[in-house]
Length: 150
Image (cartoon, rainbow, N blue to C red; front, side, top):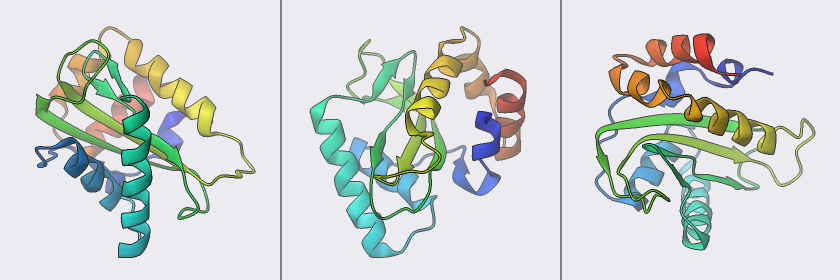
């Protein structure tokens, strides 16, 4: 399965407005279209995961991820904050690009870790962080995944 198959334009936000780590997580979760209670549960779970260690992998990329009962299948979302923000990334650099991954605790397709790996591989392409900053629409993000993502 290719990364492009896991995204649609409605889970892509080119202009993240939030200014704090917790608010960014909330804004990403909102893209999944869950009910309020499920959103609150998921945000709490993601915050706990971030407290264990930042999901900022460097080069302006963060991959917040968790498993939760509030979803019944693997769900992804992407958000970009052009100005960047502190996310306690491993390289200390601001994060501009956020890839959210949420999966149920028991997942038949078992794609959670492979998808995490594919996003990390995609992000390691030296041109990808620059390309992500140039995006002007959710469709442009999907096109970039078509072109470059595993």
